Image (cartoon, rainbow, N blue to C red; front, side, top):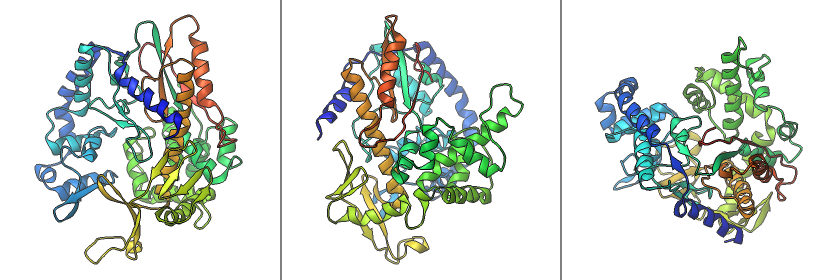
Length: 457
């Protein structure tokens, strides 16, 4: 355990044991009542029947139609879907940002209240006892990120939501959520192509990296519109598709996944797109980003070959990572574990895709065996590297005397003293989030920040 990680652990523990955040109880009550009233309407909108909820196979099919990757657990006769009420996979579905996915999960387990109601109630009861305790699990994810600890799930307060706005600064402070901008995208292109990779150069020049992707797909000049622009909604939606392409395709998304995500509006307004056009978008991205996607030389291909080294082989350096003893050791010294990684040869009873009939890589998790491939390993790496960049910034910020009250992945929530020097305090923290990483020289970092009485952005 590298020494700086003890400071990370200390910060995470103090979020819970030394709480100072407050809550707007009246707003939380309104959220609860609103969700109660809208629950019946949501269920009708799902357009499903009782048989589809009761059948595991049919329920899994409903989730897969929404692009959800099903997680499995060990059953009496082999792997079964992890869709029981207490399964972590099911709990995560109850917190999903997509209303339909969340609604399907609630209907399946016969939830007495919606996930939003539960969270509003949890925060309300907590506020009745005193300050809000932020419960995060240190390194709860395989990529060493924190994971959610309790029913409030502090990692998943949707931006601009009333639930997020219900969190108030302590007396004498303002709240400054500082969000590292597009950090995984930056890390991916840097690791794949180095500091002179074209997209890295665009980031360095302060350009909008989503617009070129959208413009190429739509074969017209896309731009970021201002309010009042007659094409405002159209441009926002098309730029959102460029954002989705840039952030999603880098991890090997298929056309089917791309189509479902566009419909759900995860990266912008919902967009209906044909499977043919979705496949076209994915193919375009892969053609335009050879440092990531090239069949034999791209970063995905390198990662695919690295799986064999991870499963067993001599120590080697791979960019900023060290591959050793079934571990990917990050530059800070912490390691992502792959000690269960193996090449699996399926038998005739296992349903696999044609190209997997000869075998495939898999890793065992607490949810059972999960397949592993090059682009999936790349996603793990980018999440792990981004986590270290942000956690090292967090350590520097706390060493300057500030606290961090929440750590939702690439964002740090910092209380800023109301002492007449608020902007100075914010600029100090922002400078640490933007500071060049010595083990990734030339990687341009940026961040967004909002400051106010409420946890709002």
